[in-house]
Each structure stands twice: as structure tokens, then as C-alpha cells.
Image (cartoon, rainbow, N blue to C red):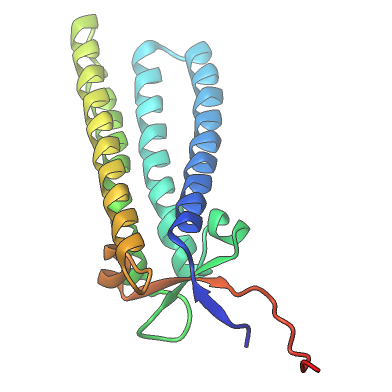
Length: 193
């Protein structure tokens, strides 16, 4: 068995940053490509419906990426790159689905904001008034901004709890009964002369 140690707060932050950048870049490219196709091919109201449905799909896929990656394999791509793994302290191995949802719940406001933003866009369809469409988009944008702000605040709080914990476990780790581990550096087992 390979020896493991608690993952540092810095490595955990970097892994989450890698994941958020990857998710953002991938889904931004998908959104841009879809927007280019939708806008050229369809009527304005259908464009808004398709864009809203795409936004809803992206919000659900993003949170699913974090939850299911931790649950199914014990790591996201960012954690994998840095050699980190999420482990259940109450069982053997990967977190249960409930544990994974609990530990990733702090991301929900950001994606919920995106979901509300998409729903506001969806609700503005059928309106011929530019003012109604703009109001819906503004409300959706505000929801997205509030959700992102709440997630950043929660992330800072979790980083503080990880850094100040003697066990290196944040609030979300304690609530979900998980720990993030890192492979220990390889040490020589040869006897010293």
C-alpha cells in the first residue's frame, strides 16, 4: 500500500482552480459554438430557448462533474494532475454519492445562479418586447453574479478551515466525513550504513 498524507491547502486550491478553469473553458467553447450555430439558423425566440436549455445543461453537467468524479473515481482531473484523492473516513475508498454531494455543495450557488440565469432567459421567450427580454437577462445576470459571489465566499471560508485545521480538513470534509490525501514522496527504504 502506498503511504498517503493529507493534501495541503495550497494543492487543494490549485486542483480546484484547474478544475474550474477546465470546466469554464470547455463549456465556454461549447456555448460559443452553439451560439454561433443557433443564431445563424433560428428565430430569436428559438435562439433564446436553445441557449437557455444549453445553459441549464451546462449548469447540471458542471456540478455533476465535481460530484460524480469524486464519487466514482475519487478525484477530479485537477486532483488527478496533482496526485490528490478524496477518501471516505467512514468506509474503504471513495466517498459515497451522499458524501460527494455534501462536500461539493459549496459549488451549488454558482451553478444555481447560472441555472436561474438560463431560466430567466427561457422565461423571456415569447416576448416581443426588448425591454422584457432585457429585464429577464438582467435578472438572470444578477442571479449568476450572486451565485458566483456566494461560491467564492464559501470557497474562501473552506480554504481558511482547511488551513486552520490540524487535520487539514475543511468544514465540508468534516460534514461529509471525507479527507483529501496526497501521495507521499517516495523515500528510500535502503538501510543506512
